[in-house]
Image (cartoon, rainbow, N blue to C red; front, side, top):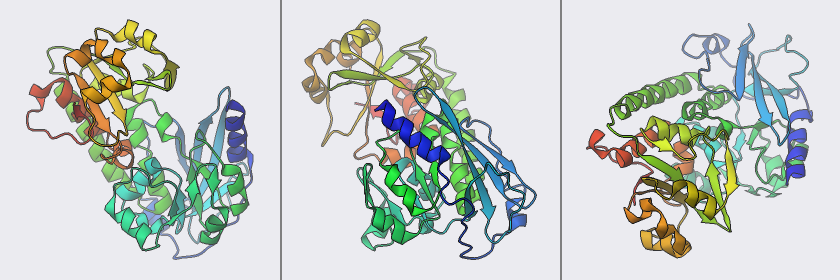
Length: 382
């Protein structure tokens, strides 16, 4: 598995993907608009990509792609449509003329940004539609405006080539199959928002899609609203009189996948007025554990966060049926399980960009007296 990830990373970072092969189709971009104050992209929280402007409106984007034991940088030039860019550094061999006309987001988390920015006209294909809730996207699929191109590891390469995408947004950490897409002849842009350690850092990736689609103003305005709401909810949570303990996950296939103490989820729960277990862990992502280790750490925890795609209505009986030992946790006994069903909540197409909603959901569950009238979007007490 680690070898497979390394191969994909090399393909993403070092393949030329026809450098400089720009189509010049569509209307010329408004460079003055791109360089305006309201459209200027400034990053405050995202750590995995940076943006640098050239005088002709070209944006030089550096995307950090971390492998198992290495870290590489994907260098991307976003060239205003119709501009004859001549001062792009040679190392920026991945080049896309923007706004894109045909783009393929390979994951629902990436699709979320196109939905939010009302840029679905520029989406020509997607992969899995599992758990997809958005009615507009479903209608476009039914009408043939958005094609389905298979799944990771089994892409319909001929369909992708026929669509002539300007760019494909990929996750270099998933199952892959991207090797076959190299022949398509367009940049495979690594989208690593979910590796961000903070909720607002993850949401700020909407600005990358804003630059790709020519909706920088909309992306900036949307993120500013999310940021303001998030900080407002933080201030509400700061009024909590107690900080309950909470742990996360459940045993699946003999393993318990734990979100690290430096992950975005841990930060969300701390901002919601809780003490996240493991409290002093330094993992920024997830790591495998086992039931015995989790029980030793969290047997007496006040709350338990669970997210799955249970078919039907999840319950304490269903949680007990998964593993009878689950009822030994104090959080189970007190009915303090905070639950999200990703099969019915639209989580993947909404939550990556709405950390303010997630934060409010957790505050409502942990400190209901602080948000008495709030209605949760994703998580609620089971």
